[in-house]
Each structure stands twice: as structure tokens, then as C-alpha cells.
Amino acid sequence: MENDIALARENLPNHQTQGIDVSIVMPCLNEVRTLETCIDKAKTAIAQLNLQGEIVIADNGSTDGSVALAERLGARVVPVTKKGYGAALIAGMKAAKGHYLVMGDADDSYDFREAVPMVEKLQHGYDLVMGSRLRGTILPGAMPWKNRYIGTPVLTKILNWVYGCKFSDVNCGLRAISKPAFTSLTMESRGMEFASEMLVKAAILGLKSTEVPITLHPDGRDRPPHLQPWADGWRHLKYILLFAPKVLYWIPGILLFLCGSILAIALNTAPGGTYVYLAGIGFNDHWIVVAALLCIIGYEILVMGLLAYLYTLTHRVTRRSAKMDKLLRWLTMERIILISLALLAIGLAWELSVIKAWVSGNFGPLNAFRPAVTGMTLLVMGVHTLFSSFFYAVLSDRYKNKYE
Image (cartoon, rainbow, N blue to C red; front, top):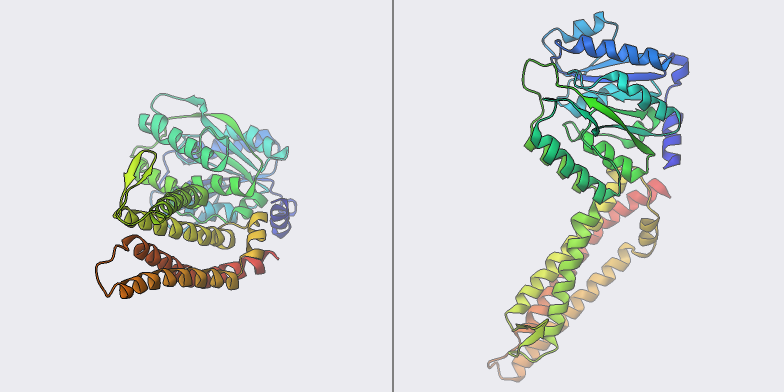
């Protein structure tokens, strides 16, 4: 991770030659009512830091005079044609010239003067500093109850649990991050889920993070906010799960496959038509269909999880994994093909044994429902493994070329 940030730092323009140390970036969409107050507070913060700074307004298509006002007040306006909170911030942060970046809304809900201790944390070696409203102060009317007591706490607990973080307020919009760290994140979300993407990738890449308590004020808008609580909440949750193969794929996949395998083995070791008892529950022939379904679904989830994780490491997050290195050295495409052929051979042999027993019985009644379904299950898994190996080869080659 240190190498990734060091490389990003080397590729940045020299901020000292540009005369800019800190950039305060605000996404803007028709914020003329509050923009002047935010810019004034941002100027005060820069003065208190005693650094060379700039104020960047990432304008997302304002039509109320926000652009003209920002320019008149000395801010640098970056026009952003792609719509969305995240799109505006990505463009603004990329265009920012400072080594330290501060982001916050332009609706006067955040006091940019509270970013001073956040930038000081960056100066002392942190990569990312989060503001925390829940550990700070939330003024009356500043946050809807469902956001304060349901949405934000729930998303915070999920993200912390999935990624092993210790954040207290994952939705806070006042944040500070070093430019090299931001570059290493390769941010891509256009909507409000930008907030979760930043923390998810920061956790995956091991950024050194901390928090500073802040105050949330009622916004100064004369219109409803752009936030859509339920839709944006789902986007946040979806993004948190997208980068969590352990939770999304591996745990449910292993549980389903193990349950199906145990049930299938137990049924196949007993004569057809007889009950098998597990934990005091009786299972008969028709349960082999359930066992097959669990095995197939669990197996496909595990394979998909491996492919999704490889795709994440090669396309969504710039990160090398020691465990993945070992796995790829052993699990070559050729070995996967051999595994798939073995599954196909065993499944076919199982089916042929059923056919042989049927023929030897002069095509009469045959109680071979359990082995017939088990053989079919192995055949399905073999075919799935065989064709998945080609996609695996594409992703594994990309990973090796990128990191080895």
C-alpha cells in the first residue's frame, strides 16, 4: 500500500511549485444562497492553517448564478458535465492543485473552519481524516431522525463489520485526504455512494485513517436537499457488499455447499428408500434433490466469488494480495480443466452405473434415484468449472501481468 501511495505521489505535479498546499473542494448545484458563507469559512480555514490554499467549486450545472458568485469571490470553478454528487467531487478533487484535499457540501451544513484540525492530522502522517457528526454535535433540525438513528448507524456498523474499520459516521461529508491517497483510490462512483466507496477502498488499501468530531448545522437551502434517503442508502449498502467477497460469496457459498454435501453423502451411503437421520431429522429419497440444489448453488456462488474477487483486484482496486499470489501459482487453468474433467468423469461413471444396474435388471423398476441425481450434480459442476476456467484465465493473466 505504501508503494501505491508513493507512486501516486511521484506522479503528482509538485504542489510547492504551484504554490498550493491545501485545496477545499465543494460540489455545487444551485447553491447561490449559501455559497458565499461557505467560501468565507473556507478562506478562514486556509488562513488559520497558514498554508497556501485554494477553493475549488465543482459545479454540476448550476443555473442560479452560483458560478458567477464563486468566481467573484475568488474561487476556482471546475465545470462538471457528468451529473451526480460523486461525479462532481471526483472532477473537483482531480483538478485540485493542493497536496491536502478537503471536501464538504456547499449548503452550509458543515463549517469548513472545522477542517483545520483535519488537515493538521494529514500533516502528521494520516492519509484520510473523517469528520464525525455522531461523535460531535448535531444541531436541532440538522439531520432527519431516520438518517441519524437508522440509516447512518446501520451503514456504519455494516461497513465496520465487513471491513474491520472503526468509523463512527461513514456518511459524514466533511473529510480530508492527501492527494496521493485520493489518487490511489481510483474513485468512480457518480452518486452519493461516493462516500462509501472512499471508505471501502481506504479500508482495503490500508490507508491510515482517523476521525475528528464536528458540528452538523441545518443547511441553508430554501429547497429540499438532493439526498434521497432510501435510494441513496441502498446504493451505499450495495457498494459496501460489492467489495466484500467473504460476506457476499464465500460464507453463504461454503455453508450451502457443506450442507448439500453432507446430506448427499449421508443419503448415498444408505440404501434407496430408507430414511437417514441427521440431528434427529429423517431424510428420504426426495431430499437428494434438495442436497443437489444446495451443492450446485453453493458451488456456483464460490466460483463466482473467486472470479469477482479477481476482477476487483485487477479492475476496481489497485491492490496485490499475498493469498491470491499463492492461489494463482497453484490453481492454473490447466489444473482447473483437470478438476472439471475429473468431476465430469465421476459424474458420468455414476450415471453409467445406474444405467448398468437398470440394464442388468432387464429394464425393470429401479430404486436409483439418489445416485442418478448425484451423478447429474457432478456433471453440472464439471461443466460449470470447465467454462469458468476460461474467464478465470483472463483475470488471472491480468493479475499476473499487473503485479508480477
